[in-house]
Amino acid sequence: MSSEVVFNLEYLTRLEESARTLESTPQQRSEMMFKAQREVDAYLEQLSLDHPTGWVIPPKETQGQDKLVQPGQYQVQSGPNQVQSGPDQVQSGRGPHETEPLPIQENGVSIDEVLRDFSRIGNEMEREGHPGHMAYVPGNSTAPAAIGDFLAASFNPYSLNVASCRRAVKMQQMIVQWVGRLFGYPSACAGNLTSGGTVATMVAMTTARDHKVPRSKDYSRSVLYLSELTHDGVAKCLSTLGMREAVVRKVPVDDKYRMDVNILRKFIENDVQNNLLPFLVVATTGTTDVGSVDPVPAIRAVATQYNMWLHVDACYGGFFVLCNSAKHLFEGVETADSIAVDPHKGLYAPFGTGLVLVRNGTLLRNSNTRQHGNYMQDQLTNPEDWNPEDLTFEQSAHFRAPRVLLPLQLYGVATFRDALQEKLELAKYLYLRLKGQAHIQVVEPVLSTVLFRIPGVSDNTNRALLREITTDGRFFITTTTVKGVLYLRVIIFCYRTHRQDVDVFINKVKDAVVKMELPEVEFCHAG
Image: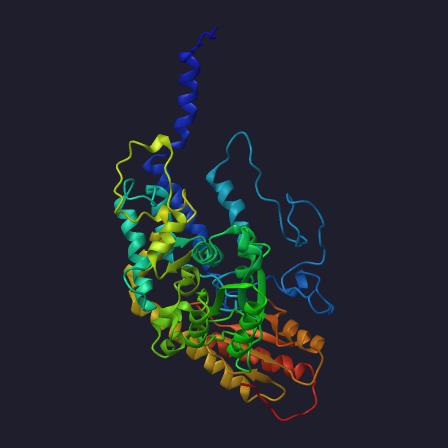
């Protein structure tokens, strides 16, 4: 026996009154936007070496870091109190000025209180986009990209299916095809905007797996070849792809920090003799440690000989292909089976913007085609449409195209080309200036990453140099270890970083070396 359905009109009316709070008026939206923009402006003003509080990381004296630590333990930005706790807790120590975020409550608070709480993040973060942020691969975002995100969230189309919003799909396809042409791909290529380089790589690797290793029983004897400088996100993808048992070979790099193709070939020959299945090799055009570029044509030749998939990781270096002086570095990329590149790096989009390209788009589609549920059986579809949802595992994804497209449309490609070329020139400028300094060994840059160190001293002494350079928080650099040697690593990538900022940094290095009172030696350089 079915129960009686009870309906209360007064109750429904009260619910409607509360729910309508979500339907903001033009005046309310204007007020929120005005106040939010005021907070944004106050933060962006601090992204300058000249601003009184224009640090990129909190100054060391506020973090209690006053002693050297052992290799592998040194963290420039973390505090002294490491909290060992569960996944509901932040794992690093709290700084002296940090506060807990405004809690989620049953009843709302004013926009002023919300923005006041959110804006504290500007004092409790590595300030991405600061001209002194020269660590990792710093993120940047432009005003048009932020407006693009605002428009995407406000219009909120389902952007992965032509039937839902053809124009949104066309915007995304236009970006993908434009990037494909940059690398010399044919029009038959296909791809997608993703949440980042790792997801872009995972989509490409999924396609490689399905094409080269169609039977899961062969996963355990499948072999993936990387260089010792390949980004760690590549190997991480194997677990997500269900290929945790696959073999990973890390190929040494040569004296130019490029994958050694002769050793690659020997690894493959040995694996074939041992009844293993070489299926994928990853070349990098712009390693994150050094900025080196692997010899793609030679790697392509080996991949072709052994019927392997060639994937190119261009996440950091890829958009330098816009620059005439760097185009030769991308020779052979047009022959790769897939490419991953990050607009949130070279096109200065917000974090969460990667892009995958597969040369034979049909292979990508075969690995991702969606079979709609019955609830969508009335949707008007055309099998000729290449829907983004059929080119990735994502479905309800953010409409990412505006954050990439609006800046390109507003500023033009030439502006981005010039900004990236400026970074290449600044890296050469830094290299030449440091090359002439006593006590400094410096590696010649390929892209916009410069490595340097004090030779003939301990790693702790070089870490002391790092700490002296970064102690006031105006610059943020880190160390890396390449071929067993520890270097201080500088990456010039932020569009706000210009020659005057590099000059300040150079003086920081010179003053730090003088303060360390090292014995007089002839200057030296590497590379």
